[in-house]
Amino acid sequence: MKTALVIMAAGIGSRFGGGIKQLQPVGPCGEIIMDYSIHDAIEAGFNKVVFIIRKDLEKDFQEVIGNRIEKICSERRVTVSYAYQELDDLPEGFTLPKDRTKPWGTGQAVLACKGIVTEPFVVINADDYYGKEAFVRIHDFLQGYTPERPFDYCMAGFILGNTLSDNGGVTRGVCQVDDNGYLADIAETHHIVRNGDGAAVQAGDSLVPIDIRSNVSMNMWGLTPQFIDILDEGFKKFLSGVPEGDLKAEYLLPTIIGQLLHEKKITVKVLETQDKWFGVTYKEDKAAVVEAFERLTEQGIYSPQLF
Image (cartoon, rainbow, N blue to C red; front, top):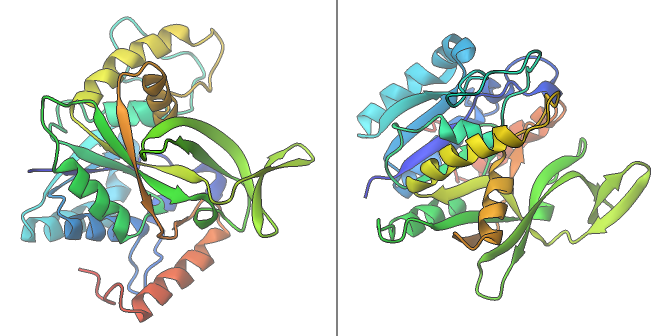
């Protein structure tokens, strides 16, 4: 069955302190994080890649990754497509609020794939390294897709302690998982930091402990093509509910999926992975990410020549 890798790469990343963080070289031969995700997805069996970018980033994106990956994918009979997330890409009847500069969020990003993604897909962030295991497990789950069960989804469940940055707080979708391994609830939780051997949520000057063994979402979801139609309808409702003057409201995948769970419209199987996440959330993260890829290469997990 054809399955797609959808990469959300439209954000510049304000916390990175300038430059397009998704395009920073981190591998021994100048690879970027996306190279590893694409490599692992193709190895797992995904045979289509869709980049979600912005029109104003297109030239830089093509030069750094697009042209090169298109050639690599062509040699492996993997197709490549582009979707464009734009602030003013709104449903009929809605207009862009004056002074709005913040993107509409990950829900709108995936919605940009309407008409492009027509098969089961995994969606990921461009600037996160997920490891090989999650791609294999999600690909295997998606192979069971049938049009008669369009609302059976899955997600990669990372262990919170494997996803923290040493350079500041992170935002994670903290999951409640039932006894059968299905997602029961998800709470978008901000400012999670290391706290000795544990983790905590920073609230002003206080630290509220959180279980470091919790499953968390890293925005790695296994979804069906029908989910894009759900996003389409939901985006209209979301926009209708944004208070006038609110220039920061976002249409976010964890919130959308959490609401669908509460309404009992979907199921989400949590596929736990022991792989360690890393990414360039802060500028200071880059050195640690470079060292991590050096270790993975030395261990033989990746070849020095990735493709």
